[in-house]
Amino acid sequence: MTSEDTYYERGINLRHGYLTELFVEDPEYLVKIPKGLKDVAVLLEPTSIIEKGIIQAFEAQRRFKIWRPKKAAVLGAGTVGLLAALSLKMKGLDVTSFGKQTGPSRNVDLLDKLGVRYVSTDDLSIREAAKRFGPFDLMFEATGYSPVVFEAMGALGKNGVLVLASVTGGDREHAIPADKINLDFVLGNKLVVGTVNANREYFEAGVYDFARAELEFPGWLSKLLTHPVNGLENYHEMMSTLTTEKDAIKVFVNVTPH
Image (cartoon, rainbow, N blue to C red; front, side, top):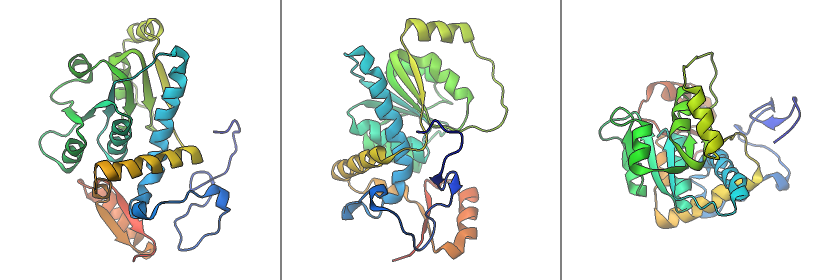
């Protein structure tokens, strides 16, 4: 976090990232990866943002002293949504995942292997699902579609937290029941927090959850790495795969293939 308008962060703002064969960095800024996780560590950056949102939700709710979340919802079943479902599952919550997909798919199958309930919003609205499977104490939004945020606000349980991870550009407008949402948030002690650009603490939390996940769900993380591209020189292939492969979960570059 920073309070400055101008800041420096690798790959994010005013500094090149790590997409290179060689780099030099101060050890205090590096997180050591266990050998057993080296092939899935590329998933740690998005996971760190998820961990930040969830951990800060718990921190914020310490104000209640007795907040013990039991049920969670994840909005979106893409890469971030799958990793968020895993993180919440690792924290012992009953998790419901929402997406647009109807029928069998690779993503839905992965959720099933975690013991996560999947609901297609084409079949059941978030609000109706909350009545059936909630109340949701913690909701994690990862759809990239801003109107879903306000639908989630209307479905969040009393004393609940809604974590927003989507960065939505554009100027979309959406009509909402503003008075109802405001009333429910005030009287229901509800909270909304955003998460982006995590620090070392949350990378380390991700490593911890990954290690536990490999023990409880062996091989699950590697199934997210669906489309490898070998070598930086093949960046055109990477961009093409990102835009054309509809069943891709994670497209990634092996900078130095082995």
